Length: 226
Length: 197
Image (cartoon, rainbow over the protein chains, first blue to last red):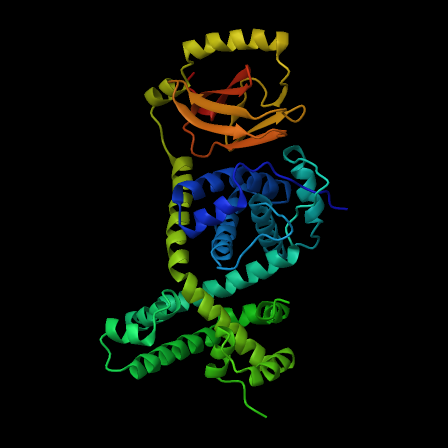
């Protein structure tokens, strides 16, 4: 049975989300420094080496920054940011072990508890993160990494119109004026064309196809969260 | 039956502007039509990624700078003179250590299990108390020049605390935990193996 874990975190969840959403580098580095020893201890206690840690941290934080900047993200199950981040690391590490085709993948959860025992405070309140939220978050983050790369490859005009519409919420009239287009219809048509170009690049991408095939059940959970 | 698998209808669905007459049918097909589900998913992810794009780009830069600083810190080279300076004990704190230690053994209620005295650390420094601290405490870490390196507030109920040393230069450091009118103090080394003999 899993024991409830409560890490003594110096910051609260709201501060963390704000730091990530405003790219507060000083604060984020403090979080990184706080998490680093916990991640090191976890990996070293679970068949990892010091060499594994650097790549794992980079990979985990790549997902975390995408998860934390999603507009409707909130921590479920009263999880703290540190248990959430450690759970992402745990899932990523499990995936690394699977890829290494280790014959025996031991119970990471029990290891996770035993290695962190001296850092935890037992409490009647369960605050382990929602496992499905972690898995879905990682899945979406992986998909978004692929899409992000495809956005980078778009021409500047397409990027501009997509960002004006979806980041700034500009109307077609505003886009028409800003981009010196003839009519609002031209703006509409250009937006549609750029969207379709991006969408077609995404669905043809090998990494995207592979991720979708691997995690198909999460597709329905993502589009229909109920 | 209406063909719902087209960009316009899916975008309307995602924007919440799909006509109510079609919405029921759309939700129904979404459950059973894999092609529709995949298109809705792909377009939803695309829209969200465009919205997040700037934040993700800025954070990637931030993260890569943090990673690089950590790697650089590990590779950094030091002269013997620098190391001698960094490992030179601070007279004031060495005296203070004796005093605090004598005081502590007499009346302090705060008992620390870790870190052991004068231990060498590399990655992180762990503070572990024998029981939860009763009230908020302050942890201060200073170098041998009496410069505060970092300061933390330990919440009441805390039984442990971890400090990452990955950005610390090799050398001698002094920590002090103040709780109400009591304080305990200790000395730790970072990368003691680099200390000139």
